[in-house]
Length: 403
Image 1 (cartoon, rainbow, N blue to C red):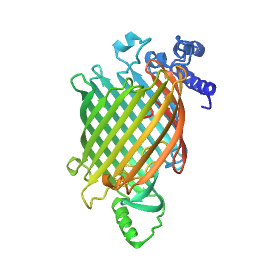
Image 2: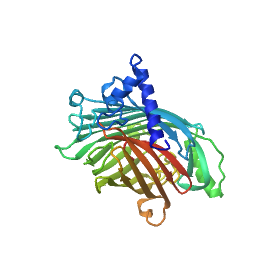
Image 3: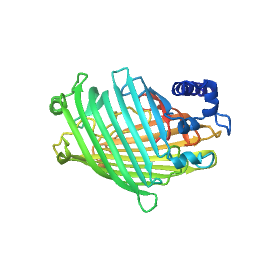
Image 4: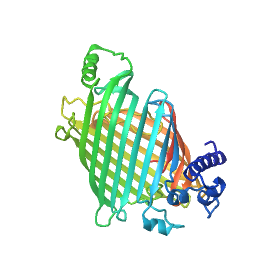
């Protein structure tokens, strides 16, 4: 995806290939002209293919450059399911259609042995008064951790994290407003093993980390949680917002009573803010806080503590029981189809909320990217970002909104 022509050509090839497989009795050129070219501007567009061809889906190649797991490849398929009313309307112009359901299936792997697969589903039911989101994942990941037992290590430790996970939430719109209230469920069954040796700086540190490893390694650990969520969502289009706000708060308790092997609480607040500065420029600001709390002496699995989540920053590189992140993105839509974006952000990770100001690890990143409107009917854009963090540069293929 080195430029407009090469990007368009590659997507055309992928979509023609899928079209030919799904409809072998139809001439490829005729099929492509009918379903893959927008009659309004003559540009490549998958709207009719996704909405009218049975089984039609958008293939999303994934080039994995996540520094925590190394280079890799993946492939995802995105399916759009419309109601009969939406299909009848055709939505030839005006606001993008919000599909009744969106499903995702994907697989991937990296050169350090990490691999995984997953299914996802998002439902927007009863005129968007009821929303569902759920994911079933299985991962076998080799991840670098820079802290264990809430102690910083002098070099990363590679742990293998393997097992299934289920995340789902259901929320209802309150009295026709932009407010939603609902519940969330998280279930993970994970086996942790050591993939590398550890060099410890002193005996006190060694005893604490060794006790942690003895508690965690070589056995399956279940974290099962139930909680509440509240959300305010006034975005004009969740797939490609230009204006509006989306603020979510999650509180989840993980308790022995509901099958969890560890007892703790997690909190998350995400604030996404979008402003249309002009017909071509948009500004987005993301604010996020993640925290966990547990009784003194409770040993939490290595993957439970949140970490700074920014493009260009490796997963789990900066962990803590309290993590705050801020990111800003400016988008220039220089044609109706093409846009470019620049972004920068920073994060802090500490042992508690009170330590975020003074005693916290810091990470910053900066990057740029581009997008192409691949399905005008849904307002769906695809493209790529490249981001530079404190240690590494990473490349991401994006589908939909950046956040």
